Image (cartoon, rainbow over all chains, first blue to last red; front, side, top):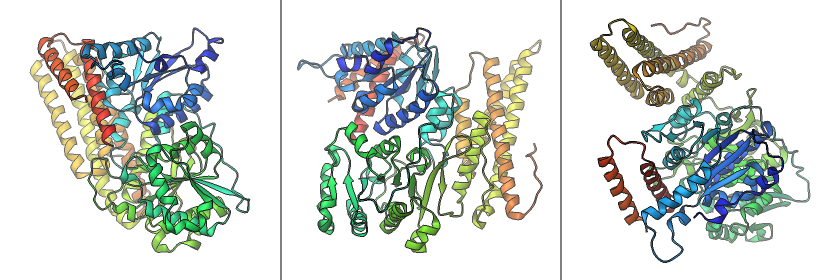
Length: 579
Length: 48
């Protein structure tokens, strides 16, 4: 048996039953990861719902991360299935459950889902368990990671999921917000409908309220409380009409108390309160909606603020990739360090937390002060309050939506692009064009001498990749020709196949020589690992198309690099890579 | 808490791998792999 609350019909569905349409298509979304991911999924689904109100939507999520958001999820989904791991493992008696009993509970959960007529099963979580669960669920079509129920092999067949698997949370070069990726994976992408710009704060209003979440799930992603005490002290001292509420979970309550009881802010204790652990998640949503500004780290609470269209200023540290997970919405601001090792990986050990020190607390105060007084942040305003020394240490991004409707972070301080920034932009243009045939308008960015110097090297790398892919296409074609001949020669097929293996090992070498080509090379590897077909002809055709895709992207990137080089050198000619 | 369960799952998976070389697609195997993955992920969440 499954716990009643994991089985019960949502209120939203009960209400919709009266207008139910048997012909409705059903999309089931699997999101087994944490609170923040569930909130970002909700954000994407809200947009999807506006476009397609008639489609029946199902959510499959972990109870521990989704049940506290039930009140919100019920407004977006027709039915929610919550996987209750603890209920599945625990027996109501003191006797431990046998493996068979646990498997029976799991089977019961999956059977409930399988009673649905699912047109598309969409896995938005990239965890091992989500792929395996998708293998057990019946659906006419499956998108995202899923294990084949027959071979048990992991399959990722759609472009966006292959992109996520090869680029997201890997390096610093993924250019898209997760919410946008989710929206693209759902399909029917249209410019954001629900995000609006709040009117500028009237600085002279009686009370300005800021919700601060000075915490994050990982110590790498959050500052020490003392640094927050400095910021809060400065804010309360300079702005007499400011009231601050610390928000967070029960686990963060004590740390919140330490901040508000710090001797430095003793004189202002009547204007600061600690609500960490004092609110339900629903109350947290309401509290943030009523705030004039959210300030904090990249965490689930920052996504709540974005969902509630509360202006945000977030500080990205450690493993945070702001281009992927910054609060989704217009005119949100993100401060990020220029530290070389930023962003790092969860597994990286870091005794120094250099990126924490690289954002001075003074700049955070200047940014908040500027936002409160001017309603926007730009270099000119910040230069009035901060030293060049402080400004040069950080990046300050502002979020906007581009002509394609895609979310983008723009550097308000107009720093010269680093090689990483430049390649992230190249990937953005290239992936978007490749996946959707949409062209996003960007000016060719001005490049510093250091970056310009490296472009010929990378252009050479793209040329080599292009050539390898063209060879890959050629040998795939040879195999197909051999197979279709009247007397196919197995030795010839094996020789051509060996050439393809050789090409793949040469592609791996490019990884070492051109680290900024890693997303494209990884994408090629993921595509090659997910060839379509069940016989040698289909698999070879699929191989041909994979090389063809990579050849097209590398050719496009080659052109963009050359254009940027020409801008630096003042040349006009443009050429294609040639084999 | 679950270490014994993890061992039992691993043992049964091994048995299935040995006995069903040509009999892929056993839903029990997929269920066991899912349970194993859930246990691992739960351990990581707890470690945080």
